[in-house]
Image (cartoon, rainbow, N blue to C red):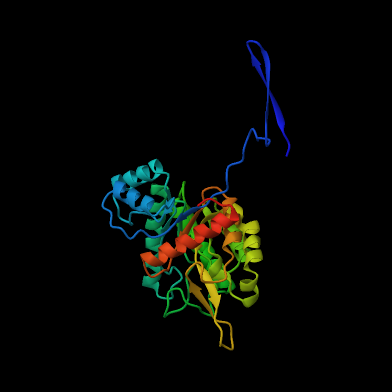
Length: 310
C-alpha cells in the first residue's frame, strides 16, 4: 500500500508525517440516485407533505399539487421542497392527445397546456405524457396507425404547438416510451428530439415499456446501457418497474411486476442513472403502500450492491 509523506511548516522547522493509504485531495462524490414514489399519508400543508416524503426516506416525489392550485400554494410547496432537498420530479398528464374523438383530443391537449404550465411554475423536472393512441377503445392501447409516418408527424406538431403555447423555461415536456406508440425505442426518441427541435423537449426513460422482445428482455442490461449512451443528455425522469416473460404460451407475453420479482437488471440501471445529476427514479403501478415498501427495499438493496447511494 502506497504511503504519502506530508510536510508542514511549523515555528520550529518542518514537521514530517506519513499517512497510509494515500488520500485524494479532491475526492469524487459518491454516485447517487434520488428514489421516490406515491405518498399514501394524507397531507394538508407543505410541511406535512415534506414529513410524509421524508418518512419514506425519499429524496424525490411526484408533484404535490394538482392543476388549478393557486400561485401561492404552488410557491409554498416549491419552497418547502427546496428547503428539504426534495426534488419535484414530474407532473403527469395521462390523457390521449391523439384520440380519434375530437372532443377527447381537445380536452387532452388543454390539460397538457395546464399541466406543463404547472410543472414550469413549481419547478418540476418534467411534465410527462405518452404520445397517445389511435385506439378508439383504450386511450393507451395498441393500434395499427400508432407507428405510422403520419402519426409520428402528428406527435411532432402537437408537441411543438404545446411547447410554443406554454413556453416553459424551467421544466421539460417529455414522452414516456411505449411498445406500440412513439417513442418505442432509443432511436425513435432521437428522431423525435431532432424533429421537435425544442430546448425544453426531453426524455422520460422507462426501460420496462420498451423491452418488447425476448432478445431485449434477456439482454436488458446491455440494452439499458445502449439507451443511456444515446439518450443520457436528454433524460429528465425515470420510472422504476420490473418485467417477466410468461411461460406456457406459444407467443411471447410480458407482464409488468414489482421491482425485484422480474428480470430487469437494476444494478446496471442504477449505475447508469447515477452518472446523471439529479434525475429522479419514481416507482409506479403497484397495488398499495406495502408493495411500494417492498419495491423500495429491493431497489435500495441493489443500489448498495452497485455502489450507488439512494
